[in-house]
Image (cartoon, rainbow, N blue to C red; front, side, top):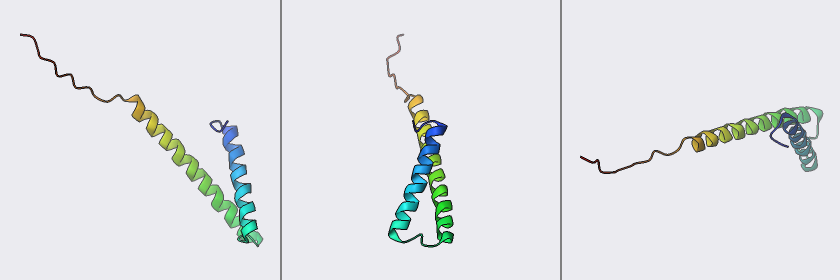
Length: 78
């Protein structure tokens, strides 16, 4: 579910609401200004985290696609 655009959208809102609830619980977000700053910060964190995960998956796929060079040290027949 998390690989598609809909899954990423749902996980974004779960992350944002969870972060805001935790901030409210710990008393970090006590004013509307703090809530806005925290919302924008959480959005940037989520987008950056998702971008890094996608880049990591792409690098791993490229690494797995390229086979390691094989050394065939056979004697040549004369």
